[in-house]
Length: 421
View 1 (cartoon, rainbow, N blue to C red):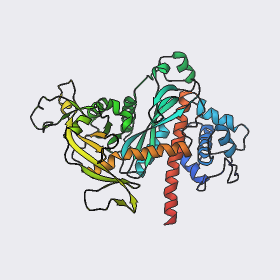
View 2: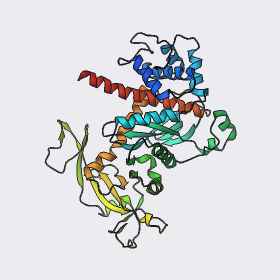
View 3: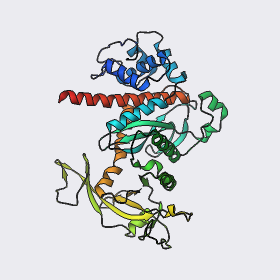
View 4: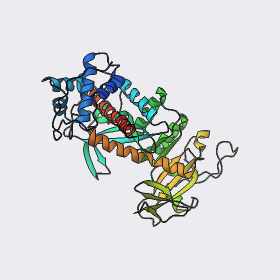
C-alpha cells in the first residue's frame, strides 16, 4: 500500500517548489513505502514521503521551510519536517540497507568506492564541526566532513552508507556530545578506520557479491594500515598511495614460492619510479570519454577532440612491515601514472589484483572519479549540504534522505529510458 502523504502544492515552473519534469507522485509514494515502510509510525512514513518530495522538487537550497511550503498545505509542516529529521528517534540503517539492495540490483557489476563531502559551517554547535585544512581550498575551514560508501559501475556511482568524521574536540567533550545526542560508544577515528567500518557493515549485509574496494587519495596517508586490515578481511582492493610511501621490490618472492624475500632497503614509490623499478610504460589517452589504450594504432584524437597521454608503469612490490608473519610478504601490483613530459606529480596505486589485465585495472582506478561526480550532484541537486540541524541523528537522517532522493532519481532515469524505446 502506498504511503500516506501531504497534499502537494503545484507551483509555477519558476518557483522554488516547482515539480521536476519527471516527478511522478505515485512512484515516489511507492518508493517511499519500499525504503521507509519499516518505520513504525504512520506520521514518520508520511513525513519521510514529504521530505523526499521536497528534496526532489525544490530548486536551489533545500531548507525545511522551502520544502514544507512546496509539498504540504499544512501550516505545521515546517515544524513536523524538522521534528522528523532532527528529533524523531528512527533508525536509518534499515533504509540504507534497502538503498544498498537497490544499488546492487541496478549495478550488478560494481566496485566499492569512497566519496567525501565537506560542508562549511559557522560557529561550533553543528555536530562534528571542526577546523580542518582542506588541500583543494588551500586553507583551513570550519566544516563537517562526511565519508560515504558507494557502489560504482563503469558508468555511475550510487551512495549506500555514510559516516561523520568526529575529532577529539567533540568525542572528548561530554557536554557537546550530550547536546548533539552523539552515541556513547562513538569515538574519534581517522578516515581509514571509517572506511573499514563502512565496508564491514556492507559485507555483513550480503547484498553485494565479491567486489574490490577502490580508494583514492582520501586514505593515502594511511594506505599501509588500510591495506593490512583489508588483507585480514581477504578483501581485494586498489588504494592510492602517496609518493613517499615506502615499498620493496617483490624480487619474485611471495606466497607459494617457498622463498623468503631478500633483504633490501625500502624506498619511496617515487624513488622506485625514478630508479627504473617499473616495466616499460603502458600508454593511455585520457579525454572527455575517459581513458583508452594508446599503445596500438591511433591518431591521439578522441572523436575529434584532442586528448592527453599518460604513461602507466607497473611493477610487483611489497609493503615493508615489522611483523615476520607471511601476510607482510603479500605481493601487490604498484601502478604509477605520469605524463610523458613528466609535468605534474605522478600518482601511485597499490592493488591486490596482480593478475588483472592492465585495461581492467585502469578502468577500476577511474571509478572514484564517478563517485566524485555523484557527490557533486548530491550536493548540487539533492541537498546533501543543506542540513540545518545540529544533532548526530539528524545528520544521519538527512544524509539518508538525500541518498534516497538520488537513488530514486537514477531509477526514474531508467523508467524514462525504457519509455523512449
